[in-house]
Length: 304
Image (cartoon, rainbow, N blue to C red):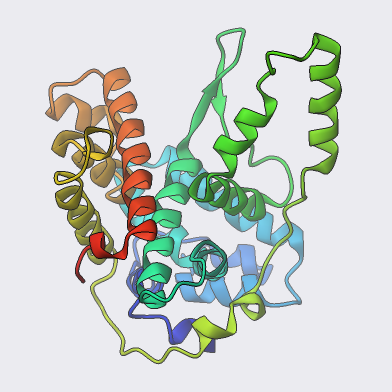
């Protein structure tokens, strides 16, 4: 937890500080203590148990199944559950953000902060993402009944943020010069080569991140939303493919960050839920383009 305490000025650290103040919701203490205590445990209490070597993988999966189920099924408290989930996810977010923010001579701290922001958005999106099968059935993209729930959640968020998901999609697309048999054989090889996600803990946080000593910042998730607004304003000066429509940005902020039900926000904005979902997905893609542009050209970075 020492390394995490040094990150309070950065997005994930601010979110953790805010998550600790959430009292209306929380994982039942009995889940982490092995008792019948149904009172909600604070995010930092859960986090300490999740980082402990003595906590069984099955217990960690139970904790994350409870959190994700509440994010999906408790719309009245979704904002608090989203914040709580991000707080418990802080070590993983920091670890992956270090990997995502490639070394650069231009303000590495700023790049590290932006990497956390895009991972936060991707993680919130993945908890509630659905897919439609060929038979027309809709299911959750993240199957929480399988083991290693958090590793798969975080891995999927990182894949989206890093561009791996798009790369894999292109890899699996049949090439014009491939026969059907060749295509199937290549897909089988790709599945065998796909790396397995493994749980990560506090000890994996990069030393460069752990050495920072910024002062605490109590703004919590409001700072994340403010950064989103900065990116939206910045995108207006960029080519059309990068411009984030104000309505789309509001959908993104209110549903993924604010925890409001998509149908409720869509109705207020006079949109169908299907159209709202598509516009929100467009905003996510454009946000990633803006952040990628910042990485390639530091002059476009928003000011803190």
